[in-house]
Length: 434
Ligand SMILES: [Zn+2]
Ligand SMILES: [Zn+2]
Ligand SMILES: [Zn+2]
Ligand SMILES: [Zn+2]
Ligand SMILES: [Zn+2]
Ligand SMILES: [Zn+2]
Ligand SMILES: [Zn+2]
Ligand SMILES: [Zn+2]
Image 1 (tube, rainbow, N blue to C red):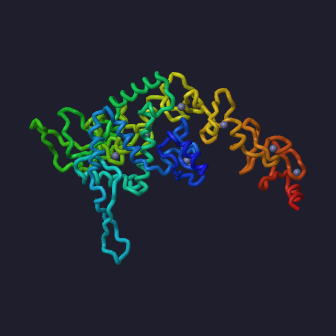
Image 2: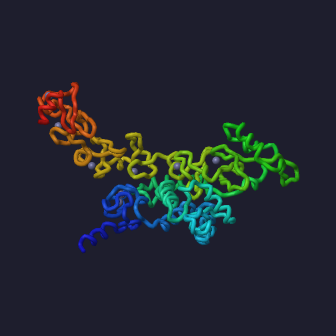
Image 3: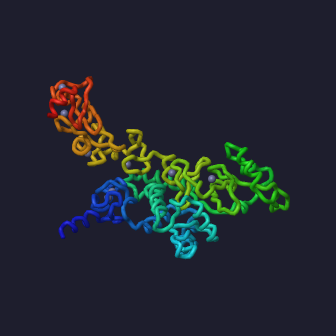
């Protein structure tokens, strides 16, 4: 078939996800085809993550790349070779009986698409149970889809890999490599699990972790008073230390003994988080796979750490490493990427219209986005005066915004609208409807 051949030719070189069905647009998209520099589908303008792509290999490669040349390589390597140390497919979850005839309890095997790489599987399972249900990475559920989406959103490949960026100059590549090195050395980490009661006591004289860092110290220490069974913990030196109770670094509520807590090496061993509280300070989303970036006392996801360091282009979604860029509509843009979202023509010095936060050139606006005047039927130019009432628009001119009965100009006058028709009075309305 001629058409099929053509499609194959066009998608060559953009193999990832090519031809995948869009889950949002369904049949309106002919299949995923990567735009030549935007990180979206050329056909429907949705992201790769909105298309039905088997992402596993893409994700593994991406996470592997992210941790390349870091001390976390072994963690990730272990993850990939041994698989997630959870009883994959063997975890029995008890649910309530569906009908009186069935046994009182029914076991259902669940598969986790990801679980914390810890030695103790029950800790990992408990961790997942402490996440909101719609965010648990259980295969085939809303939670697994949420995780995939967050992987794409929080860890853009083009934030870490110059080869995923569009036509960088040698200078930009160099800048980017320095940036990636710095963020791996200074910020990137993977959260780990512990039990609050297993935290090493702090050296004598150091602040109470429950009170430290909490703006509301009273609450933290009040929780500390009631929560601990044994009042004293022996220090390794043999001396006695006052028992420590930890409060969550995010919500400030007490950490419960026996429940897994997340800690982050970069943040220091005196800080713990509830599993559901290990979130990005900007988007407040759960840090996907516990991958975090630590900066000035706060946790970031990859995307928002990048945003805190560099401007991001509103066109290609890449961080900008060039000294020359433009600001428009509250966003930053590579000079060559401030383009019409529909036809990709460069908009510098041209008239454009913002439609749903995307710049559109005037010809595309007139063709596909402009409101049409209910009287004369023509598209209303973006700079023209326009009256909008309900779903209808008119040129704000005496020839268009006028009474359908007596043709009187209605600009600045009282009027009534019946569907697309305007009237100056009940009389004129009666006159035209009969
Ligand atoms: Zn789509
Ligand atoms: Zn598409
Ligand atoms: Zn918390
Ligand atoms: Zn974020
Ligand atoms: Zn750009
Ligand atoms: Zn255009
Ligand atoms: Zn008109
Ligand atoms: Zn009239």
